[in-house]
Amino acid sequence: NQLQTGKKIDKPSDDPLVAIKGMNYRTEVSRVQQYQRNLNEVENWYDNTDSALDKATSALQRVRELAIQASSDTNEQGDRESIQMEVEQLKMHLVDVANTNVNDKFIFNGTNTDTPPFNDQGQPTGELNNEPVMIAISDETTLQANLRAEEVFGGTEGVFATIDRFITRLENGENVEASISDLDEGIDQIINARADLGARMNRLDLIDNRLSEQEILVTRSMSENGDVDYAEAITNLITQESIHRAALAAGSRIIQPSLVDFLR
Image (tube, rainbow, N blue to C red):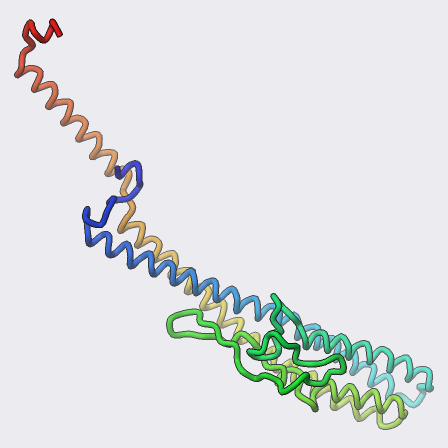
């Protein structure tokens, strides 16, 4: 039975201690594997958030370049109109980034993941949800999977309001250079948010390594507790077979065959 099943026991009554330990080990393995699935969910949030912040930073830096270009006195009305058109397109792109949706979840709207945080004009669709999305990754550790929209893009006076003021200044053709410092603040805000995210991602890697090692150790302990040692089992089987054959041989010598045995 051991060679066929690969297990030391067939039922708990064979060895209650081994059975109890095996149940505990299986529970521990299942627990670690569930935490690893949770960790993968957090990692998915972080990767998509980091990608969104990268796109947002690039877009804002381009808007800043256009602000520097538009602040030159050599620009004519047609030049400012061309810059304005590009800025408006970049704003629409930033709105799309702020409304990033992953697996039917808007990742920048707190726990209200079924509603986009901003409308097409970059205005909050309601009161921005600042509740953290917490996911357990060990018995005593939970990680915040999301970044708040307000700390990345700001609220009613965030990056979208800054871009709107820039567009208005382009239309009026005055005080355009004032938008440069405003855009710098918006860029710094996103960079700081990305730095915070990077620190979380580093911690996530450390926890991932710890869970992987824990799974290996628990799996090994479970195997040592319940799995059969094939070399030992084969040796025991061969020994039992040898003893059995020896017993049969001894019995055949003790009990001599009679004429009746041959007649059978």
